[in-house]
Length: 114
Length: 115
Image 1 (cartoon, chains in turn green, blue):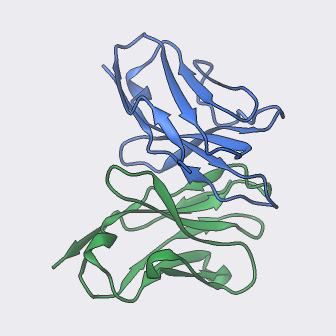
Image 2 (tube, helix red, strand yellow):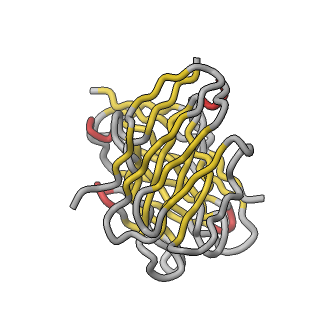
Image 3 (spheres, rainbow over the protein chains, first blue to last red):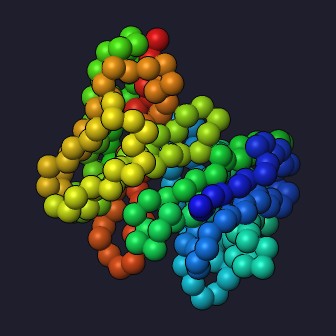
């Protein structure tokens, strides 16, 4: 069965430092992968997605993610974190090829220190 | 140009009561999804509607949960005889039918507390 693991429950990063949030997935076929961000009091917002092609995908707000099939990973990165990036981040994989449902990881909470 | 809206934003109910949650998708979005987010957990898929097709109910946790959608408009998620473990944030999302996959746009959620 498909699953998503986000090993880090909580990460604290200094403002201006680089960020990497880990995501590992389990899926038999070529996965459709996503990163969402959930800021306090707001709904989930799609940061970026991977379907096929270039394994390094660019998203909004300066985020990028790299798909590594050999490692079953889709880690999210940002070269310089801003205080406004503090939020909860969810990695997700499409549950089927039709993409009618997403399977989410449990999320990583990012805190940004000054 | 509004996004997905959900009501109520918060609901407190007593164990055993029925509750109804509402979702208004983005206009023109043919697909609608319900998810549940329990404290400290990721989102769990509940149900998916696409146009007039039969809904995908594979994520509904029990027969106490049901959902309806008329055409491509509002959807209601009903939980009968609520239990304390139903306490969660219920999220709705909608998307355009466009290609093999569609970006899902999420509402702010309804926070349900069952006492």
